[in-house]
Length: 132
Image (cartoon, rainbow, N blue to C red; front, side):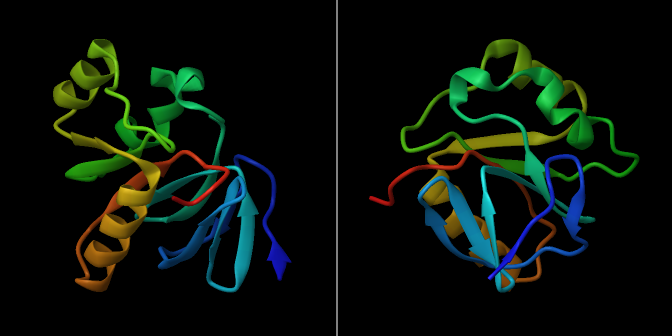
């Protein structure tokens, strides 16, 4: 199984279905990735945060600063559902991007369905250790 480059490098220049998740990472497109994942129209990227408490507004700069922003972003908050902070929700609203928070498992399933429907989907997924 091919390993992916470090954070900040675009490592798959397209969106692909996620085959599995857990053990601190994801599998997709015959690759494995340890750590969190940011999926945008231009591809799948390593993402800095490890747990929900690590997430800052700066972690969404690639989403909110994009010339063409997605209509919404699925935010997988880990193994438990967490509500994003008020400043984060406001920043997304100010940029016209809906922020849909849910557990990482629910976000992966929703992402795969929307991708199969050929919808324009973006996601920020915190890695989880175990699949429930």
